[in-house]
Image 1 (cartoon, rainbow, N blue to C red):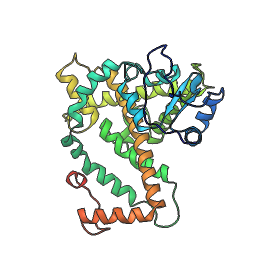
Image 2: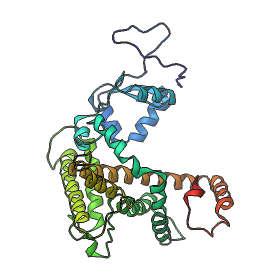
Image 3: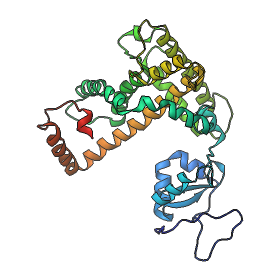
Image 4: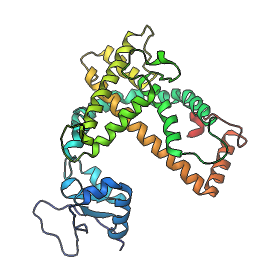
Length: 328
């Protein structure tokens, strides 16, 4: 069954359905939450194929409508504070923390304006040399024969890129001094904390026990905030002048120095660093892994991509660095 969406109507509270208009199909089931947590991709794919792009569920214990059509998504995002509102499970809201955009949308708007100077094309262009160098070094370590576990290999590169660009520190497992003053002694400890923190988002009850994913996630979140606090303190104690264009945290630190009563309090910076590294790390790693997998699955697309790149940067296989002008 394929549901065709030609029009989406917003009904007033209590308004009866006009003739010919139907509500989203499927009746929510008591085990939807477990099915979704067990395999989110399979849950969405199976229901999408059976019911179409919009369908009812009982995920997280209440009526939850899944939306997978562009027109419906536009309706949802345009309806903020009008006919839609942010509503996540209590466990998820607490894992995000009070400084997330979900908890305090007015702070998010103020923070977005304050962060804008750090996300300009000039700043992002300045990151490219470091990004290129790390990618080049890591790819040279990949073997030319056999298969590799794609996501772990990509995740390692992304983590090595994001930590210095977001936090302004280089965590080198071969150099113990790079961890001086911090609350972890190696990169794997930090990654493990983030993994435990991420798992906590899927907690079913707010039982803060080491026996539950939520309880372990809350504890990991506290340790991650301690780590961010230590990073901020180390950056402040450094004898080097802070360059607001060097990394994400530097921009916030300089902004705080210039306006101590502004939006960037210590607590907000700690939470912002925690969420930014978490979101960027998982999103970028997943996107890049998916791209590489799809290019390997469809070699004709890979050949076309190589041809297009050669037109921009030169002979295929002879380039290692991209510049912002070439990516436009």
